[in-house]
Image (cartoon, rainbow over all chains, first blue to last red; front, side):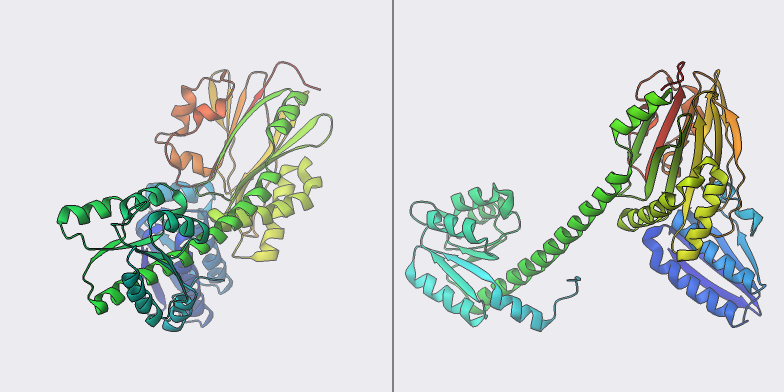
Length: 105
Length: 383
């Protein structure tokens, strides 16, 4: 997997690609750290995660998303997941992620 | 000891502990080779004048490397290699053949019989030293990795036994199925050697049976540890199982409290009343089960974030399992590993099959831990 940050003002876009499973847990920790640092310092107020290039995701990464989401919400910032594929949408549907995060097709 | 790259100092220490056997019928060659090995700092050097003596030495001491001549009395080097390679205990033994045989065919024959490398006589001493060093380094690295693998394997086996002690035994399944008028079949397949799925059965009282299915985050050893942590909480809150929604809410809060951000699990919990067929259930972060009755397949809707997120607020739903109807519960490892939609598999399933869950399980490899459980209500009420 790989991720790339792009910031425009207080808008942070993260482009993630590849397979997100437990085997990428180190990258997950890195992602949580980088995003929460920016959010905690008040440097961003919108976090957009672009999933267009994500092929597959497992429950471990759901946990990663929830950790990021909770921290973003605590800081009154907004969190958007963009362009998840059909399988990932199914997973988000099972866990009703749309109730706590904006998901844009 | 954790595995780490070997430093030059480590290598020197390992060389001083390394064991080499020189196998040659010519005493002059043995002296020459011993001198080379001593100069390289190799700590234990044994000698054998033929294959018979060598086989005994190698079998007894399992050296790191042997320097093997081919033409010897009693048992030659080719036969010794044949016998050593036939024994899996010597798969990793480095065999450096040192020979006067010059033809390409002879050298190929040596490799085919299991030689790690072949060096021709007369020796170029610097080349011989370089080859012994390279093979010994490789043998040491291989040993370090092998030892590490064995330690990890032991950890996995111990953790496996912990999980096995929690999963219902066939005897428990049969006994509770009979007592509560059910036919229950299950398949539990971890993705790696062990996994993070877990399920359990508990008799709540004469009338009610509880079933809990957990899919803890992560795979392998980490998944198993997470599953064991969740199981501790399942035991802690088992008195709440009469109300599956309340029970799962308590698990969620407890998991979020003890380890927010590290421990998540999808879970389904239900109680079954053997007299009325009533099923009370709740689930979160796990695919909804199906209820198959009179040829119709209904999804028992369960939706919500995984337990551990700390915001799960479930209410208990209920339905009736009529006689002959079947519930199909599963972790997402099943739906991810089958090549078609669950409904089409259930649509053509033979629900009279004794090992129903086994017939529904995929034959191919898994991409996640998988648990699949089928519960059928029999005509009798049990007990």
